[in-house]
Length: 236
Image (cartoon, rainbow, N blue to C red; front, side):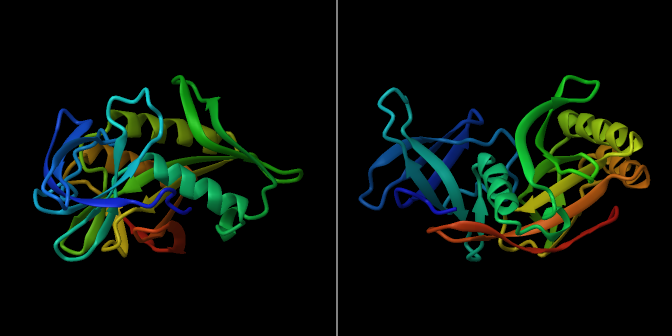
């Protein structure tokens, strides 16, 4: 996926109220931009980092600018906009770029399923193949050259694991697809030191037949795409 129109740069002052961030433009002007990320964003919002933002032509938006990427002092790019992970996966599925899922012909996003009032990110089907349910998660936390998910306790993530286990037990394919949206992440794990329950449930899910995939995203200020599969290791 390409960024249209082109992203513009600024310097981060601070992120606050979860959805807002103040930045300084190259000309010294300070503006407030929208942050489409409700997570902790640990390591992704350090004051002084370079912010790359998009601009909407929707006149009804109070904050027309949206935080898309962070460029860290070490030169890493991190995708902040959590909506992009599903867009990348949708593009990769359509182009058959994920070998493990390339045989499916029908792709439906945001389908209701499960016993806990959930929506699966993608539902895949094809004659002669078991129905496939895909839950997508963004990985942006980097610690000691290792990626981790989640970056905060996630009750919603725990619910999704329970739903996927139920799907797997029904004999259908249940996929947990992690997308590394940080160019410094080359291997990832469940963050047992942050959410022990999630890490334990993930191990149970794998034992129940839930498939875990992790793909790295190539990220530049012009475009993003899923590039290659990387390892998602057991509890560290």
